[in-house]
Structures are given as C-alpha cells and as structure tokens.
Image 1: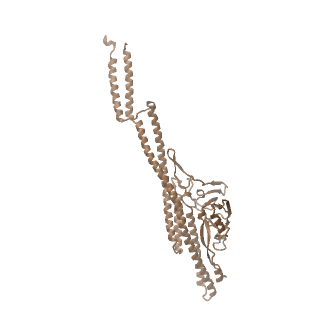
Image 2 (image 1 turned 45 degrees about the vertical axis):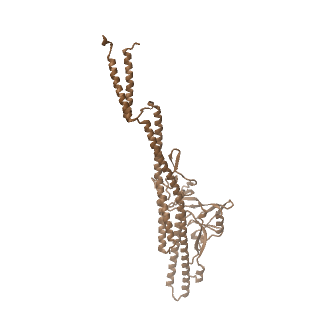
Image 3 (image 1 turned 90 degrees about the vertical axis):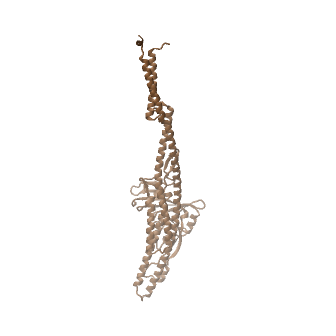
Length: 495
C-alpha cells in the first residue's frame, strides 16, 4: 500500500489531537480536582453526583429543622421545669401555712406569696414566647396566652368539661352574728355561725356574667344524658352569710362572682355515679393577664359592638409537626391546656377570698370591742348583749380560720395534681426530645457518609491526576517532536 505524505500528516494530526484532548482532560482534573466537568464525560458519575447532592441537600434541611426544633423545645422545657419548681415551692409553702396561726399579717403574707407564685407561673411561663411566637398556644402562635389588657367588649360562651373527681367536699361557715341596736343576747345567740358541708367545683374563671342561664350536662349511671339548670345565686344577694353555698338537696347553685358550682346532696350523688360532666357559661369581663379561653376550651366569642362571631375549638391536639428525617415527623410543641393547669390560679383566688372574709370578721370584732369599751359600765344589759355578739364573732373567726386551714390543705392536693399533670407533659416532651437527638446523631453520621461517597464519586485523586497529567504532557510533547520530524521531510529533500 502506498503511504503518502498527506496520509502521514493527517494521521499525525489526528493522534496529536487525541493526545491533546487527553492532556487537557488530565490538566483540568488536576486544576479542578474533579473527575468530570460535564455529565457527558461520564454519565454514571454524573447520575451518582445528582443523587448524592440531592441527599445532602435534604439532610442539611432536616438538620436545620432539628436545630429550629431544638431551640423551640429547649425554650419549652425551660418553662415547664420552672413551673414544676414553682409548684413544688407552692406545695411546701401551703404545707407550712396550713399549720399557721393566721393572724392578719400572716394572712397578708400568704396571699402576697401565693399571688407571686401564680403570677410567675402564668405570666412568666405560660405566656412565654420564642422568637415572637408563643410557646403554649398550639397553632395560634401569634395570639398570647393571656389578655394583655382589660377586655370587656367580647362575650365568650365557654364549654368546660369538669372532672367529677374534682368536685370536692367543702366545709364553710354558715351564718354570722352582726350588730343591731335592738338585738338582745338571745338574738345574737340565735345568729350563731355553724360549720356546714357541701360539694363544690371551681370553674376556671370567676367574675362571670350574672344574667345567664347555666346548664350542666352529664351521663348518669344508666347511660342517659341528663341536663341540670343551675340556680344563679349571687353573693351580693345573700340574706345570710354564705347562703350561696347552701343549696337544697336537689339544687345546683351557680355563683357568678366566685365562679363556683355548689351541688346539693341528691344532685351530687347522681353526678358522682355518672360521667362526662360539662357546663356552659358566659364571661364578658376579663382582667389583664386573665387566660384567653380559646387556648383551653371550646368556646364562642361574640363581639358586642359588631356582632361578629368567632368559634374556637380545642377538641383534638394542635400539634406543630417538623419533618426531621426521610418520612419522619416530630411534634415540637406542648400545649398549655395539657401542661399548665388553671386550677392552681383558681385555688389561690379562693384562698384570697377566704382571707378577705377573715379581715372583715376581725374588723367587725374590733368594732364590737370598741362599743364595749365605750359602753356605760352600769348598762349591764347592753354589755351582756355586746359580749354575746363578741363571743359569736370570735367563734365565727375561729371557724373561718379552720376553713382557711382546710383550703390550704386542699391547695396542696390541687398543686400536686397540677404537678403530676405537668410531669406527664414533661415526660412526653423529654421522650420526643430524646428521639430528636438520636435522629440528629443518625443524620450527622449519614451526612458524613454521604459526603464521603460524594467525594469518592466526584473528586479526583490529586496524586493520580498529577501522574496522569505528567504522562499526557510527555506523550503530547513526544508526539509534537515525532510529527515535526516526519512532516519535515518532503520530495524536495531527495531531488
């Protein structure tokens, strides 16, 4: 076969181009430290690179979600643990106070300290926020747990479910002797206070609307739903001290000022044998720092100016879900209605009312003592009458102090129940937090493994790339030399 100079030149240029391509390939690998520059260089590497990069992007997002969730759950845990500590302090304080003498200064100290506990629990912790979002309000993270100012323009109709076991036996002072210019010692003796017993439940709010019909519904022992209409019994309408706590056997009293339901014996026996007790009531006047009903109860709010109606439903949990892994989500929030019990604040209000009544009784006693001191010593009848009144008021005070002691003892039980409920929420929170921590560790390991696999797939070995580049460079230079020698000869050299 005849080989011409043109054929040799073409073959040499083709081989030189191939060597140049290889030279450029290894030079680029050495400079970029990457195996390929375009998907067409190696489709297999390119496909794997896409897979690894997608996986890494997802893992990075999950780790970001976990970081956000960790911050949220950390803030929540701090609040819950603080409330737990304060409830323990309240239990200790009530235990000590229950054995006290309850003079005026002691009572003032008790009320002040308990109010500080309540303020710290509800205002500092239940109403806490993180990054501008409230921690314990479920989906409504933009709505505070408490009213930030007095609210009187909206009427809430609240449906509150009552645990039948929280309807407690309650002892109270019934009747009181009061000064009357025409009363005799016998009259004052007939006004003697007595220690009475009833069954009572505290609703979650006091200062309720008095112009309403309150209905209770429950399922009796036969499985039949029963409805009881409560009798509104205002404290201001009492003709006898604590008459609002003295219903008939088949009656239920609703006391709007104090938010109490007082059960007659027959009604209580029927309810106690049944289940699923609930009550509907209305409240319009909310003080600043009162808990907003929509965070705890099914309720309807009516704007008294515009008539606009808002329905709130808390049935079912309001879980804030974060995706923390492939096909894996985590609940990051804890609702206030599942962790911070409103009964603690109501118990403190109850103790405050009892202490206020004691203050009034002692003021009455001082007034009678002054009348005795001012009375003519020779007016034996008047002195006898006043001394009988004094004796009755002193008895009333001792009975009221007994009520205070028993109420403080009941407060211990209430705080213990609230702490138990809180500890359940804390345990649930802790289990979710631990699960998230384990997921984070797994993701971090998976992230490292994916990064390593991605590097093995995409990154060129620097030493190997340098050797390949050096070989390609030598080969390219040799090709240039050989080609120049071959193409340097022509027919003219032989003429």
